Image: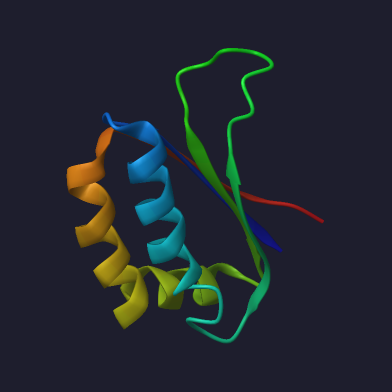
Length: 96
């Protein structure tokens, strides 16, 4: 299984941009076969960090993640989120 985690620091107005980001990310929930889990979360402010919104997803294998990366919905999401963000971080790793 592959875990794919992406975090974004959003530009102001953060609440408005978080809503736009969430709406765009939701379009990828079923983008390709092989998505096992797909969660979008917004920071609740307990530990004030630099990230405002996060995507946590799990894929059956590397091929499913690769297909997701080039899927039409994901390509659109990247173009939507680009202007909304100040920065982005991502990590992909294999897990049992």
